[in-house]
Length: 434
Ligand code: UGA
Image (cartoon, rainbow, N blue to C red; front, side, top):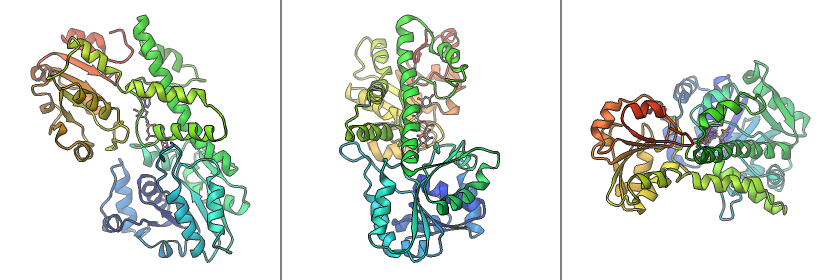
């Protein structure tokens, strides 16, 4: 099938490359000429494990193309995916201007039937708006479909190639048949393609992310309670997670959720609820808890230094909002750094992938280490903000030799408290008795 993907950001590039991988001919369109040039010459623009190999192969085999021209890009396409940014506007609702602007242009360009697919996370009712924006300038038949993506950064290729489910929102039989065919190769193991109306599909995406964020904030509150009551959140997590109705996944407490999706989507769903005069109480609490959780370690750090961290120097491991990505959007590490600097401390950081992004954001406000161990030199304590695998079994002798105090503040519960005590560390984590 011939496909166009408009927008070569994270979702667009993964979507385009993975559709090419199953034999489709994919043209990706982006207004950023520099990006298109890079991608056309084989330079990948995002870090995502496993994507580069697929990208190179499909480029070489001429199933993947890039252009800045929407007109050229859509000419022969049967399906056009819109994978455009929907940043939060000033009031917390998703800003649809990128999506509607492209819809507007499409209306002027369509010359044969096409399926236009909303892949971006968009509020309920957007498919209708896209439909109207295209129809305004267009007499050619077309259908607008909502097909939200459920990719996780770091495992996006796997998520795309073997999705738990595919959600397709459309009332058109014609579009349904085309979309079913397109996704057939990805659900051969029997995972469902769930057809529904556009609005339900749009809400499914927000409901999924908000539910997962709720699970995390819930566990973060249980962790707080564990510390107050003398219980251990790891035990409670295992105790509840083995109930199938609750499930083992997404119950890990920490220093809050971040990234480009959960914070934005929870906020947008709260805003959508307000728009229809509904006060979504649970989600407001989910956001509050998450705000507090980002700075969960601070009082512990301050208490260790007897209330004053002015002039103290901290090593911080992990900047990305989660492992296996260089994405620092809404990363808890950034909030911790801000708080440390505001309290008069200095910070040296290390992250396996996200250093460049943080350098661009914070410049010389902090120091950057080449290596996780050189990061520790002259530091009064180590703070861990992201659970990268390389931090899980470090050389503790090297750590204690470099740190001024044997103190580790772990926001991701990487180590066993009893082991750390044996090694002579002052070790604090999230919701554990040790
Ligand atoms: C999330 C969803 O998981 C995807 O299904 C969705 O497609 C995507 O948003 C999106 O809307 O585009 P992502 O933001 O890549 O994916 O990251 P997750 O792996 O879901 O992690 C989100 C945050 O939750 C991270 O900050 C992570 O540290 C935190 N988290 C996750 C916890 O604190 N505890 C957990 O048990 C799990």
